[in-house]
Image 1 (cartoon, rainbow, N blue to C red):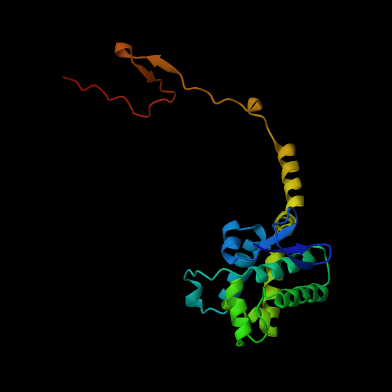
Image 2: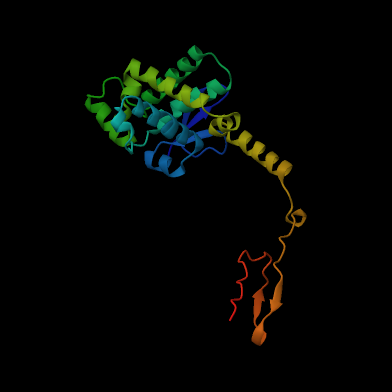
Length: 225
């Protein structure tokens, strides 16, 4: 199965026949992409697409729970390029230009919808690459595409530094995680052991727990005869 690989240094994408061993990569199968649930996928799906969908809902619709169609690999790849560009501190215009260049490359390889999805050639390609037409406008409509780009940017701004690194820099995130564990690790022997409650022997050899708190019940007064 081919994979879409994102190159952080150039903000470019390439399609490889085998699974890469490092970096950010996405399977071209939407089902496999959903099964892996990578951090980047979750940022695009839950952090961006759901927010964009709720923006156009009525107040009544926002109070309901919705289940949206899972995004296609090409859309998650565009989100990854925008995310990494923002993480590098690039200008917004350069980030959008890199995303559009990557989209054109994926369209040329039949992995993203074209501007004219009505042709028979595009229909057969869409069926073969599992392109979901729910998100086709993000690739074919300029206004909707800009809206998606801004949605990824807002999702990026809502996260902290570690979450931003986790999405597109898995090796760096793992290094930071291991460093954190070494710094904050506490051995089990150094932890205070819990105190055991005292026990006393009851009648007939049974063991009962000793009461450690005083009873709040007042003693009854003896009535006179």
